[in-house]
Image (cartoon, each protein chain N blue to C red):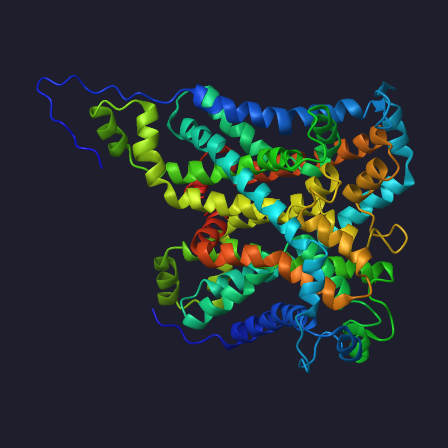
Length: 302
Length: 272
């Protein structure tokens, strides 16, 4: 701590504030490696480019192809189904687990430490592990046929979608429940004491105090889920490889295939632009709802 | 306030413990079993014979080199992100005027840019810079995409420093640079720790950038290394899962040392 000198006839100290110059290096770096590529992908979507020869401007060709592409429609649908499935499974479980873990008993602290472990595995590691566990010859289905029947869980469309939702939930529910645990801890106790005096039971307290108080966290966590869902690529590549057929070939996966497997970078850029549009749209909508953009109190303690 | 125990919630939490625990047990169990035992007994069994053989198979294949590369990438990414994000957050929190507000909004928007969507122009850019198939080709984009979250975490922490302390610094005649070094950075230690762990985790687990930006054995990182093992060791499940386990060991070490920072950061990220 610095010493404060007392001055006679002191002029009020001028509080010198850091200028924007402080942000410039980071800003430039971010513009070059994140913002400029956003503009770049929009431009490339107007070109034909094989990665070897210079991109050739073709106007809206890629986009008219995009609109008539049945694979894109299927991918968009698959992306939507996975997104809805993931949110429907993850959100309620994360909220309940998070609120439960926010309680003060000692066993809850120990259990939440274990709940945290899947976060230490990368998505690639998680997907590979589950792929082996779900293997019909040596994995769980071969030992628990009363549960799985004789089918390969990854072999049908419904099975593959269900597996993607389950594995994603396994990996990310711990993350989201940590968010809720932190938020639930910061709800003032007095609210519950007042409710107790009014004779409100546990369920009513949860519905009328906990849930409304978690509103901002619900929005934050959903934003993470939506953006995560729109960019889920490694899990699809490693768990289902887009299959069976192209049933789980969601947008980022088909973008990757189009660009880095068939070297059609122009068309892949159109798919990427669509993805960018969806993700920014969703995020702007959700941050508006949460008031995040106002630099308001929701940001305190972040 | 004492509440009666909630048995239903306790039971549900126990079910979740099983859901989390059983696959992790299967991972551990499979990685220490000889392959023949695994094919007989499956992933969930009481291990009858323990072996280190799977781990030596993985080490012999050069996996330690991938881990070393990933350590370099993670450390360099954290260093770049801190050097850039600390001054940004300082300017955002202490600066005045619409420009600094605009900077903050830009980084908020940056949270929503999916790296997948811009991978093609990034690939072009890294190629043009002559960084394809170098670790820098992974480090620079990873750092750029870690900046928004870091700025959010750091500016949140810096906002909690009281105005009186800044005034005291001003009375002392400190300029913004000295204020940053002697007041802001020491007072934001915990959010800096959170940001470090966050960024390291992101760099460690990143998959797309290393997959696209590198190619050769010398620059291979852990996650694409695992991806290759799938085709290489497809039949040798215990070796594959030993590699999966080894890929998490360094993060486990970080977690053991920086658990507080990580959990506090994750819990704080939800907003109130």
